[in-house]
Length: 257
Image (cartoon, rainbow, N blue to C red; front, side, top):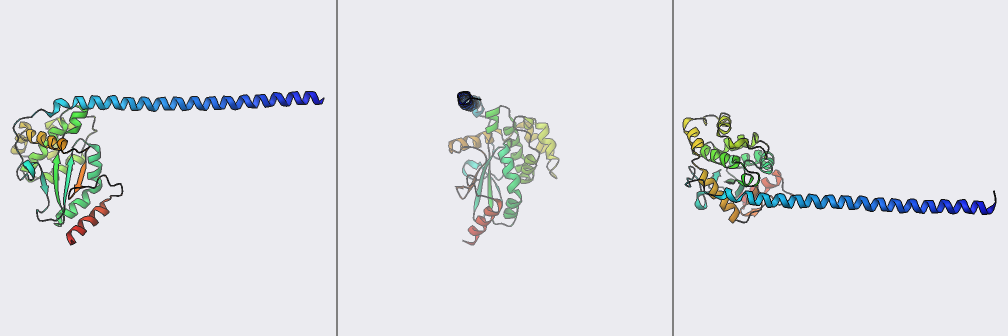
């Protein structure tokens, strides 16, 4: 083969290599643009969903009747259900929604520690019930479950029924708790709760107005979502290093102080 032919073939190979690199670069840019466009679409969809959620919640702020606080409710406007001894030094304030999956996750992880600390007199918990999911996804499950929990408070069975509601929580997109019959059925899991008085309280929606007022207090408080967990006023749920063990240490330290 002559030198001229070898040079020609080498040049052709080089040109081909250059073209291949250009094609790879073009393909990479195209994939990047496609991914970027997909992200923008997802973000755009999220924005639309956010607007729809905000609008769908407007009608949910209407009063559900007279404000009747459950037995023993405490705090401003009697909007808190307290668990634990009043003399306990630190107070844990929890704003929660029985349809909220993040609330269920918090309760599942922290429940043994919270029970231990309240039972030993070292912690007092104030529960505030809200209905954000009703506003965001429609339905009445948050309201109905909140009312039923307040009815359980009337019967001095709040904590046990509260735990049962989270143990049996449906998917947030399914409004199972909007059915009073289901809430009464779950009361059967708490000894002595399923009584004629409890059933009437649930079916009458005796504490609906109270749950709505608590929901309004949550919104006016400027909180961003549920659960909101405050230890003596400090938001500990936002602390990424928080664990049940760390919370226990903080509570025990507060008792020593």
